[in-house]
Amino acid sequence: MRYILPFLLVLAVGGVVGVIVYQSRAEVEGVSEQQEVKVNLVDEWRKMKDGSQTTIYIRGVPLVVEVVNTPASLAQGLSDREELPNDGMLFVFNEARRQQFWMKNMNFPLDMVWVRGTRVVGVTEGAEVPPEAERESPSTFYYSPELANVVIELAEGRAKELGITKGDEIGKLP
Image (cartoon, rainbow, N blue to C red):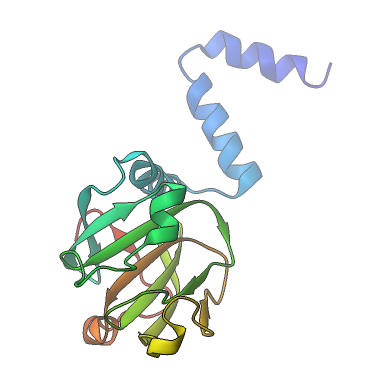
């Protein structure tokens, strides 16, 4: 009986159902409307055609990045490329976890920006090209300091140049 009265009240109000459900979800899951929009941005990246380009903003600076979001392209990354595409590469994973990257067959050093949702959780500066003897199987691995579902690879030194730090937001607009 306790749950029937609120249910009947919601039915009587009609158009308010969506708001009540959303507020209830926000209260239960601790999700704000702003966080919901950020999650949708990651979903948008996940649905983009693999290899397409998009513009993201970090600290108000526009960066044109190549989006990779399929298992094959996530594994390949920038390996065997001679240069960085535009400003970088945006890796979009299906779930947040402790990400592990290596520099297999890389031809240039990188900075890695580790992101959960749209919030930076860490930055690795200066990931080096492995010695020739280790090109196929590098012994150095780079790990996200926290759970991450997005990784942005930039040219070495670019993260410092932009002043990217933990807590920064990645966005679609400045």
